[in-house]
Length: 92
Length: 455
Image (cartoon, rainbow over all chains, first blue to last red; front, side, top):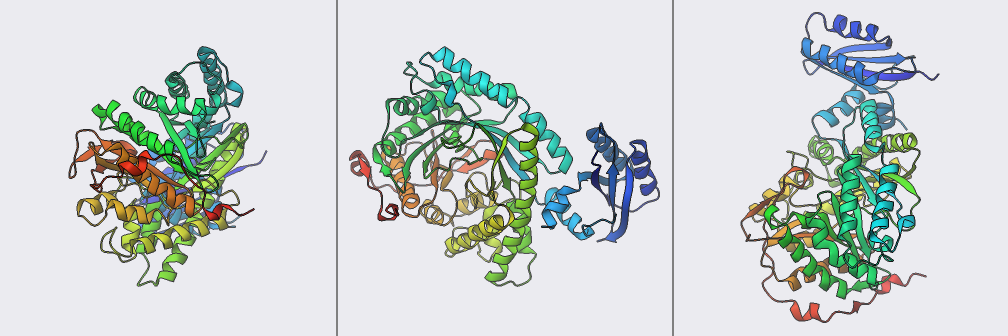
């Protein structure tokens, strides 16, 4: 099967445990991190991950829900979007 | 494998959605009803209901799945159908409003927001079916919630059917009166067109044209807020810089719409029709076409220079869109609906934007006099004359123009009409007090202009 690739963005005020919290959910859903970058932009903690899923019956909605709930607990905004969202907008 | 997209680009997209109201305004499924015709009203209705609910059963579910996949909000799901005047031509009943009720019920049952196509194309003349449909409009729009109606009364090739223009003045007034308890909201679902596009996904003017395939997905993308903040972020730009910036921004938005439209069409097994990039404002702050014009340096939308600024905007949007997708169609440009745009409402209230200026603006943008409230006692001949002017602009300039006007029952200049939701709030605007009655009463047809002789 063709693996699905997602961009995960985590934006908010920096604090201890953000990476640990977010990646734990990813592990639970069997979502693999392909690449990760982290910066502070305009005083905001910004983490961007390229993630890959190889399962056919991957429950995207449940994963998104779980990720944003964890984000809420940590005080950050977490979004999970298909890679094509960005690829189509910024690359020809 | 590395992240191929730069983090700043990723954040730009996120910003567009979170703060600048970038959205897919609508995924509209066009369904042909040509095979539903029947002389018996009950059979006709059953055919129409079955066809729509079969084709569109998965539309909302699929659209929601695609929305989740890409993380871009899709605001409305809609259906457009073959003009009902064509489908019901052979039907023996004289009142066609039961068909509208069927459309409404089908739309409700599949969960879409609007259904368009209670329509007739009468630019050169009316058949018995066309006339039945037009006369059924007030009842149809007052007894349904989701049905939208459009009548094409002019084209560059055929000229303007002034009998239809005259009739529509009466129909609009009657529709307003029959929905008086809701500020005349029936008229917000009724458009009179010149050169109506066959594949427009936007309401109230969407219908599934005669030359369209069995089932197609058309996507309407919007993003005045994105363009507004892009223009505002430029430091002391020339107008050339502004045009370039709008072009690039609309390119990005269009690409986004295309990937979503194709994905929805693929999952539904439907044909992907067009992508319509139209800057359709919403009442949200900053999501305003007037705000873009003001960002270019105008103190208030409607002042001198507004038409020029809008011409620049509309052209740059089209150029960006045309580069981004080979499927650009529909209206693709800037919309200037007064009630749906906080900046337009403010401009009307402070006296900088008049009906006459709006009419001038429609000669350089993609639609026409849109969502304009006028006093409830405006003579029907004046409404017809407003339509005639707008049709003339469309006919001569070989472009789509439209009129969606609400003679607000019991209201006068200075009052406002609340429609709620995306339809917003319409300030009642003054009309010219001199009569157009004799001109409208003449009827007949304004011949096609010399521009029509292109063969």
